[in-house]
Length: 476
Image (cartoon, rainbow, N blue to C red):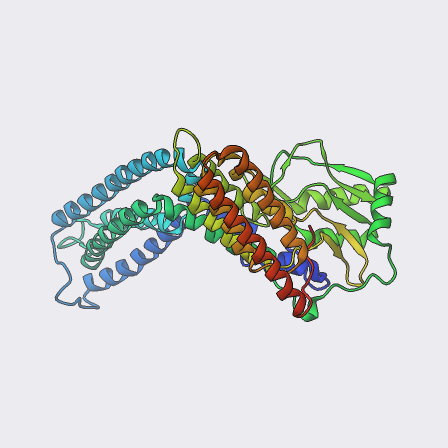
């Protein structure tokens, strides 16, 4: 896929693709592999060996002298040392990572299958494997050049010393790895990591709009309503060529191709949705431009076997919800884990309440609408965060109360009446569910007290925001 041009990219596209602090889809694909970092470290180890070998060769020919603390051994002893280091390193790698995979497999049964993917994309785990493999390669390369064929035998004393130093580094890394893994599979750490991913994804996808980045007016083109009507009546559908989860959409590319073909593209899916080959991916108007646009659509969409956080903050919400409803199941019945998930959902949605959710309309440099997307709405994200948890929390007053309190905390940072209406609607649903499932009168009284406190806080927030400067609207 070619890089997105930026010279004439509209403000909406810059907000969605230019300001993102998340890695690009190519970088994300590399991050979730176990070969990139080890390969780089093996290359570094090979270059280090070439450097130390040149120094050892110069020492052998009496061009240089080594410091007194460099290990001096015979050729036979040097081989034994290097063979011992290489054998120990490769054994430790096999045993440690095998045991770790087993532990993570067991942990993923509670946290969800995505635990393994998080393990693979963890930089600390990749560096640990890379350091061990690099030490092994360095020791083997050094072992190859130890020989008795030259007069007096050639022993790369500096390289042998560096191998022993790398072994000490490996011991340190092993201690770190054991600590890191034992910490990373603890449930609060897993939830906090996903919660942090949610906040970063929201920051990347829904940034503040700078004063000079406001959309250009559509001075000469058709309105959104007119274009929607034209697309419905005479638009040409473009089918998806692949099946899989939509991971990335090149909005800038699509705006550029629509501008060149003087067309309008309406997307049927957003990142996180599942594509089915042969099903409509987008609709193009006028239909004569569909053939040219179809090629660009294939290049501007990336699909894969799983969802990612790129352009899809809802994925992090779904991960937290998955852990929460697993904890609320009859087999686990872990109330505190569900409460922790609700707290992190509250943190993410509080951040979202202060952001601008675009209307999904992207214009060219003169203000004409060229792309109509399906951006997530505030209502959809709030519902995804609370609906399933509410349904699984029947008869659990502690979880119900925490959900109401979470909505109150989110309400403190809302910027529009529509956001507060969405939160109140969710709170009403939680209250109705509690009235049906909680039979203890005292628990019912506590739930009603927290609900009334939420209503008061939303009313106070309504007064505070209406008295201040006008807030930017958020599309439901």
